[in-house]
Amino acid sequence: MLLSRGATALRALRCLSKNKGQLQQTVRHGHTAWAYRKGTAPPTKTLFMIADFTQGVMWWWILWHLWTEPDHILGEFAWPDSRKWTDEELGIPETLELDE
Image (cartoon, rainbow, N blue to C red):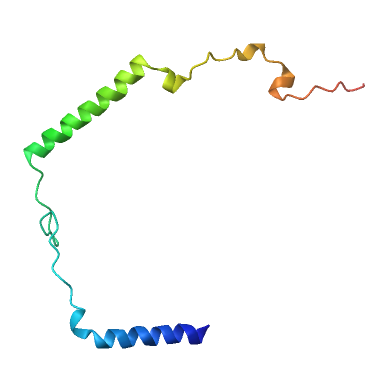
């Protein structure tokens, strides 16, 4: 097992030594400004307006559906009356009478 891993490591080292000039980091052009050890640029007013609008639509959607379709949260069927359950249904063992 060590021999097989050693052979793989040697192949990788040989490959690395052949390609020394190609191991340089390329420049990456991301979608945001580069921020190294400093804060990022503040968001624009348009971005704040879009975020507020999106949050407003989300809360309207949640509250409207809670108001018009509460069965999604509360369930579709009526809750059973727990006062009508017997001890056997609740899993309560029978009491044993002690002889005195």
